[in-house]
Length: 186
Length: 392
Image (cartoon, rainbow over all chains, first blue to last red):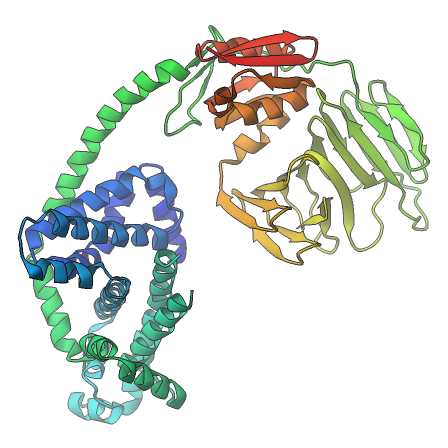
């Protein structure tokens, strides 16, 4: 799986539209939702995401791996959002307040952590077979093994096995968050 | 730095929490973080509270997003940009074009490797100075002529610009290694085959000290200058190139090492295989993989690693002089090694002009000057071995 990702970035660097599309499909969701945290307008955020992807395409020579690709997009979207505040002609104290909160590093970092985690959870759910997915969902709602087993009418052992499967996916993906944060915070 | 580590372990803890996989210690750590500030508390609740409704909410928002439409806009924008970019590159290229009639056409563009060669020009190296072989007992042989030596159990043959070491089959007991040195002067280049079959291409202004036969655990050679190695695979005997107190250690592989004495950087470019670069001074090391290049700065002790098109750095082996968006200063520095010239700049600004090209190493450097002059940005004057460059 990691090998595939390497290929995609390389093809992207070489100007392959299909590879670019694949990257877009993978990362759109988290980037879009991230943008919405700054500006709660779907139209505006869609435009910003569009511009950022165009920018990343123009600089495609600079990226050798997906974390650096994603970090650039996060930064680019944030900057566009902050610029949007600057240009908004609303003489409102609230706007200044917004700039202070949204302009900060911790808001930026927290938002990234949140969206990456959400994406991980969403991906994990999608990839899990139906049985594991139900169990995992109950997990997320804080149920214990025995409670889940009782709820679904299966054995505790089954619950544990399906747990492990979900955990494996999570582990891989966590490494990605780490890489992205490392890139961004350099 | 600290913030990165905190964020990382934090995300990890929170994810573990959602899986119910926290240890006692981790649990306390997480609780401590949550309690330390209001915003932490809020973030935690946000991330974990009601995760199911979070997931549903997220899904709803995404459903109303125009993902496909945004992509279409991006794609059409790419197509438009492609067209305009080509036009502006041609306008810029007009001032930096290198056209040499029937020879080589070069454009500065995003892909400098799509360079066209329209010549069947032969490679000729100028200069009367020939490479010299110095054996361990201090005897010097000019490699211009054919030599056939027999040294201990090794026979040394020189023919046609290549020096070959062959282990004599009658070798009985291991003999202590004796070192030879090849000195390749400016304006020349040479090829050498070592006793284990490893092939070494030596660029201009380069010295290589090597044993006539390899004894012991390591196969070690000492380099000053630039060489390309095609190392014979032998896992039990690592091949080590020592350049200025930096050891480039390989198992069996093809790579280029550039470590001229006057430069503060040692550049290792790997084509195939795997290589480990170690500094004896700073006791640190890096491993490089194919198509990667490691630049070690001997002054700062820093390593910079990047992916490269290895052809740029190994083209000299094929008698080509290749440069990609290189400053005139760097180009002249390289040329001065190949052609043994001294360079003076009348106008300092000229040093920073950038050029790209893929040229044969010509007999006369004047030919290269002619090509660079076509850009109408520089003018070269040459008298004996001195070159003066002025801006136009």
